[in-house]
Image 1 (cartoon, one colour):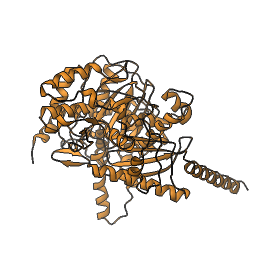
Image 2 (cartoon, helix red, strand yellow):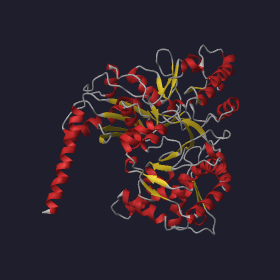
Image 3 (cartoon, one colour):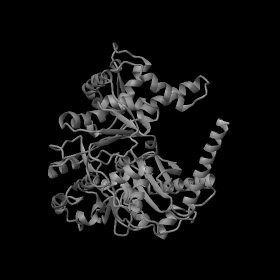
Image 4 (tube, rainbow, N blue to C red):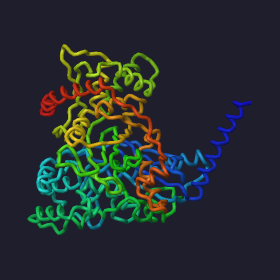
Length: 548
C-alpha cells in the first residue's frame, strides 16, 4: 500500500500546485520577468511565492554591420513579441487560461552599449552593443580624466568615441540609454534605469546613489568646444534603486508586448536592470562578501565589496548591486562560444559515423572526460577570443589552439584546455582582487551555460579562483527570474525589508546551493596553465595583426 499511497500524494500535490498556479495567473497575481540575453530572450512567470510557473523564449543573434555589433530595432521587437507569445502558449497548454493582467513586470537586458535618440524618439544610429571594442581612445581619455576605470563597453565610452569621430548624429541626441532602459521607456513612457544598469553608463556616486556630478561636469567641459545643445545630465535616464516606482504599462506598451491584445494596461513595472544585476539577485549575491559568476557567451564575476578598492584597475569595473552597494566586476567578452564550436565538431564526427546525436550526452562525455586529463592540460593552451578581449588588451579576436611537439596532446587534455580557457581571462582579473586587494568572500555562486554539465564547470571555476563555488538549482532560471524577483520586491515588500533581507526571507530561505571546493592539485595545475597562457599572449596578438 505504501508505494500507491506515495504516488497518489505526489499526483495530488502536483495537481494542487497546477490549480494554484492557474488561479494565480487567472487573478492577475503572477509576476513576469523578461531578459534580453546575447543569444536568447527569455520570459519567466512566477507565482506569489516567487516560484517559476511558466516560461517562453526566443533565439536571436547579433549582427556585424559596418564593423559594429548590433541588433536591429525590428529584431528587438519581434524577439520580445515572439518570446511573450511563447509564454502565453505555455500558459495556455499548462493551465488552460489566459494572461489578462499581472501583479508586476520587470525588464532586464545586456548592460552597457549605446542607444541614442532624437527629440522625436527616433533612433539616431543602430544599437551599439557591449561587444564592440572600437572605443579604446575614448575609454582611455575618460579613465584619465575621471581617475576611474572606464571600460570600452560603457555608454559614456561609446558617446565620447562618437564625439571623437565627429559623428553627425551626436548634436541631435535627446536621450541616451541601454537596451533595458529603451524597452522600459517604450512600455511605460518613463526614461528611467535601475542603478545597477545605470552604473554601466556612467560611474555612480556611492553617497548620492546617482551619477557622479563631478564626472558629469568634467565631461561637459571636455566636449564644450563641440557646441552641443545638450548637457550630460539632460540626456541620461533617471537613476532608480531597487523597489522604486518606475511607472506602469501603458496601453501602447501592452499592445507592443502582447500583440494578441489580451494583456491589460496599468501593470506596475520595476526599474529596468542589466544582466549583471539580475544575476546577482538570481544567485542571492547582493550582500557584501558574496559574489557570483555568470558564464555563458560572455562571462563576468561580481564581488560585492565591504569597502572601495585601493586604486582603479583597468581590468576591474566598479558598478553597483540593484540596491546601490559597490561591486567589483571583471567582465570578459568571450567564454563558451569557442568551446561550443569544438563540441559541435565532435557532433559532426558522430553524424559522419551515422550515430544518433544527443548534445547533452556529447557535452557530458567530453566535459567529464576532461577531468581525467592533467591538471595543467599537459601544456596545451587555448585562446577562445571570438571577439576582442579588453582584459588582456586585444581589440579583436582570433580563436587559437596552441601546442608544442612535446606537449601531451590527448582528448582529455584538449577538452580541459578549452574549459580552462573559458574562465582564463576571468581568473586574470580576479587574481587582482584576491591576491593584490586581499578581498574576502564568504560565498561565490556560479550560473550560466558552463555549469549545465553537473560538477565540471564548477570544479574548473573553483580551481581558477581558488575558492569554493556553489551552484543553486534555481540558478538555471537565470536573469529573467532575477528581474521577476526585483519586480516582486517592488510590489510585495510591505515589510520594508532591504533587498538582501527580502531575498533571504522570501525567496532562498537559507538555501546556499551545492558547493565544490578546489583541490590543491587543481589550483596548482590551473596556475601553471595561466602562466603559460599569459606568456603566449603575443601569439594571439600576432594572429590579430594578421589580416586575411
